[in-house]
Length: 192
Image (cartoon, rainbow, N blue to C red; front, side):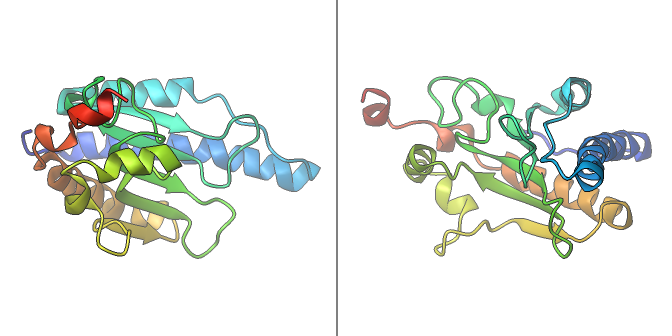
């Protein structure tokens, strides 16, 4: 895949979408403080649509995951390469955090120190992890201790927006260098 480079306008558009994602969660977190009730997931369709529309020209599709009913403690955005979506790949046909490899941006809204995390990650679901380990991409993304090679944490969105944007581009360009074939499921695993 080609190198992703953004001009100032594109950087700002990406940053505004991250702000929108964060604002959705902050509104619900504030509700919890006021009512004492566990927050439900907010409506996120327009934010996800905005991210997908913005990232499509660079070959990415995304999925926002906020929890199944109540707001998760680590709502996230999964950014998946479109060229590794399909039944022959570990990621499956749609972007999801439960399968394959992807760029992952999470907001740990209950944690004060490391509120935001960005990494090239992989599914940590039991079956998803096993499938990932069968791929050639695994050793390029995950170190021998099981940690992501490419991972950064931030304590605040606004003060780190430029760093987050730079790290996203750096990680995306590293991720894009891994050949598509490295994400293919082995024929034996596809037949089970």
